[in-house]
Image (cartoon, rainbow over all chains, first blue to last red; front, side):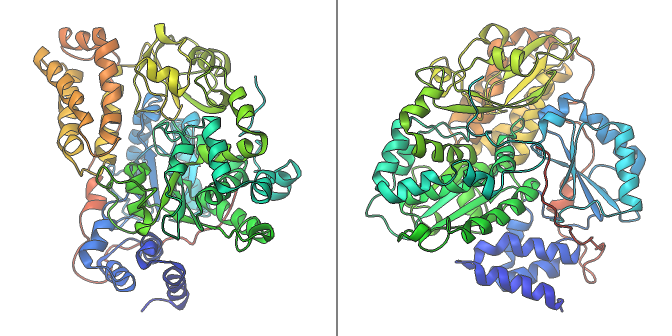
Length: 164
Length: 463
């Protein structure tokens, strides 16, 4: 059973679309935000609403960068590995994040707080090296800055701007 | 510096509101077109202005619009490509954050010209804040009757929706983008199709980049001659945004006349190299373009001049490399990006890019032979035989590496390894693929799910 609010949101997406499948990504995002990631139930739900076969939904859910088919943490840290950030030594950012969080890239901390993922250029190249945490940009990263960001997210948790 | 057109309203941390925009003559172009111009006249004006697509390909916008058959089916669609994902490129994000109504007016004018009733802004997930901002400003424009039914009392009706992408660089390709909008796997549509005739839902569709559309209000308001006059070179068109990044002292996005030289962009506007760094090469238009060595820095940066010399202006995103950066590793990094972000639909990407990765990787680590280098050259030369522009774009930096920086490749072969300070081309290790490629555990309801915080809607972006 989905909460009423989510039901309404999903109905809204489907009703406002000229063609049902146009709403596919919006529906998947909303279900992902509800379930935490795109679990099998989420995909079944999406398929039912969009009149898509399981294979068709799976095809979308596994194609895109910001749809997660496996559990992710509360905060997904998308670190840019584009050539500009690379030039500005984003390898150090990856290393530092891995060290302080104690996980590999692609992994999630045992407390479920953080996941590190590499991502395509985030479009903030003048502030390289950069990363995106739940929709918010962080640029010109240093180890100290990363520590501050992680501490703030752990303590206050209100740093999320948009949760997609 | 010439007067800015696209960045006229760029200010601190606030975008130009509808009131700001209107007070400064905004939507005058739309009023003029609706009151006194036939759709064909708008197309002609854009054609005469010489405006070329700013998304990378540089196709004349007027010709694209003119491709919609006058007796073509309805509804027609005006699609805006805001899926800017090419490394080094961040200009479209800044336009949206500086002056969202400039884009909306450009879309309305394009829609009027081709007879479209629906507009779609396709935007990448990293730009969610911009998507929110656009949604709000579309509502404002609707309230002021610049969008919606019977715009400004005429019988022209047009509305815009913001369509979110879930993120993959191939979605920037117009055919792939249309498939993404239609909710199917976004690989490019087979060659030979013309979206102006048969695009979204099999109806005429025009796809333009944000920067291209943002130029249209000025062209309609001030005329084609004014627009042409903004460029420095006869082959240039208007002004161009140049986002500059890499080893420069003052990275940022500069609006400059089309036809300005790379030297001026880097050494005047971006304040030259970082202290202690020496220029080695620059990519003139994002990672799908060729490295330009120092001796070619005075080439004018416009689509025509660059093409005449065998280069592409691309997105105009200038990425600057210094003498201490290994270009083999940089190219390898870009190829990792291309291999990951392609749709893998046809052979050059699916089989070619992994081969390029392997060969470049061997050069970088010092185990390559001269035959491997020749093989690399043959492989990238083959990239042209692809279904879309993705693989040929990916080939560009490799072609330039072999053409202009062979000495650096040789140094890797002779020295049995990278002569530069060790920096892995792929800056991370791990298995991130497993996160989004394999299904979750079968037992129980959503095993491993974590509570996700509720989003807080804020619209303010760093610009």
